[in-house]
Image 1 (cartoon, rainbow, N blue to C red):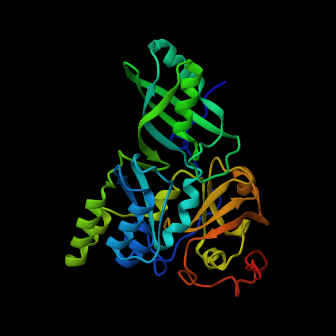
Image 2: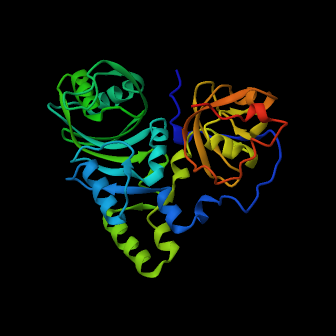
Image 3: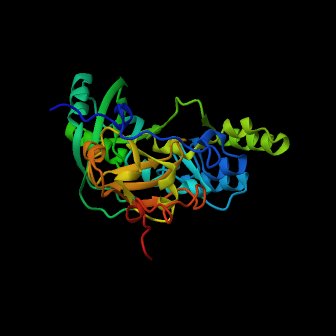
Length: 345
């Protein structure tokens, strides 16, 4: 059976359904937002150091940037280092998207006995695809058996009883428990000695915008002093970055405000859709300028959306854009009025 491809290796093709233009008077491309909005809808790809908790790191970032709301994409234990996406203000709404985008870790596993390298390689490969896990005692979720998907479990090197390996996995996989289980299968026992997260969805330690907390403090101070937007761009990325790995639907300008008021997305509002949309999967709804409008659950797959003339193609899960960013047209557009009527409270 072939391995499951990790989300960051999935290639999607954009299929155009209808052609339209976007009015430059409304909205803006994510990179060209005014500084205050750029922060408000921003994400930081932060390199967490060993010692503080993820919540402490988020709190310090919040204090440095003088914000009201902040969030993070995936808790790391105090001793664990690496990629910790920090969502700022209204961008906290996109954290949900990171749950579907997978993780990658570099781990040092300490075996409790001597094992041949060939045996270690073989057992690592056996922990690929779907596995069963019970969360460890020190976890924030209910301790019941659940399945998680391991995309790859790559042996890197071994020195004595220390095994260095790279694992790509579904969100919610406990690497500490994975090490314990591998040790049990090897017959000698084992534990997680050291761990670094090298990827969280689209955010990687190889990205140009991978920064430390010291970088955040320095460049934000530079922006406060000189008001140069490039200082912000060095440490903050648009929240749309967090949506890179989930399939997207692009809508026309006239559909945007109805969506911001809670209306479901219907076929007349769709301009293009990416391949790989499955029914009941989470999709990102974007404008022609690339702005995130909402997260939604697909009611049709890609090819059904492309052929649909009427009906709901996606039901809204979370609105990401402010009402009034685009003009309200759904009340006056008699041709598609019944397709753009917002939900009643």
